[in-house]
Length: 145
Length: 338
Image (cartoon, helix red, strand yellow):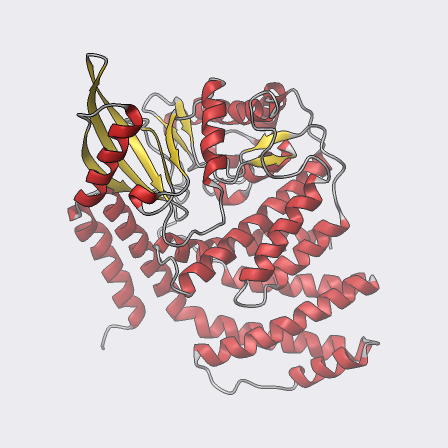
């Protein structure tokens, strides 16, 4: 079994932090190398979950749009949300998932602004519940803690 | 490095009137993404006496994380050093930066000290209580100072509508620098606009980045230097308090802001030192604002890094880890309030 990218990143980070950084000549170089190794550990974490996070976010936003759209009086926004709710991922590459994610997030902002403008607290609460799930999923754990 | 060392020595010979001045041990040290920071020693004779002192050079990088005003930072150091707060003595400021290619300033080095790493769970150990008492008291003293009396009354910021002014500034930063849609930041901005706090009870000099990691302490638990005044401005002193209380700086324990004292004790010390009273709803607004301001800074950092203008890894860290952190703080707090 070959090493996966997350294992390579993780083990390289430990080597950089534990073996190489102390050999560097000054505090700036050591500090920079330590931070790079920390970012490599976060990247290892992200390798495993990045596609899953984006696919779930996109599915959650589409589901919310499907529920919220029929209740909207704004015909243009309703139509955009309904259209987005029926789309599916074209690819599981991160760049494609991101492109879809950004488009959906723009619509989510528009939906939330609309709810706030209309004073629709129930709709706003639904969006906040979704935003909390998005933020929880994207949160990064400090390695080792 | 020897070119920089030689240029620095030539500059200081002229500046300090010390023709034999020598610069030694010049080395870059960690100092954030907004300035390049170097430590060095200057040895010289003046008026028949020889002396040697450790100094710090802070030079603008080719691109800066946030648009900060170096003259503001230098003047803030000068004013609070004179007032007796733990602040390094500023030595020289060059706005044009001809001799070192970019604008820079030089200040006293505070030796044998350290700054906390925000990722460590217990950075102050046995000195937590002592450091905490000083940390919140000094912040109160900054709030107590009258900006007009210490020569900082003309700094940027606002004397009226401080909350609106700061919110407008950081909203603009987010709108200009976001590389992807930010639904939590946008929703937080709307919440902040709908819930503006009352007028500030006092106009103070706001440090702008007063937090764990931005001060130096020694092995006895004495705070020796409050650093990084580059975002200093006039405004509501609760702005600094909200920022210092932010969970990002709590070392994993939000009940002990800044990794120091229980929240209520910290606030009591601040009130005693500042002579001001805390309205909890107003402070809550400034705490939400602090997380939004954090997001704005991290969004800018992400852009600098992603577009290759400043590839210091701290920008990647801020643009990723800190963005995710503050999105979660805002979503947790504002989803409850919704």
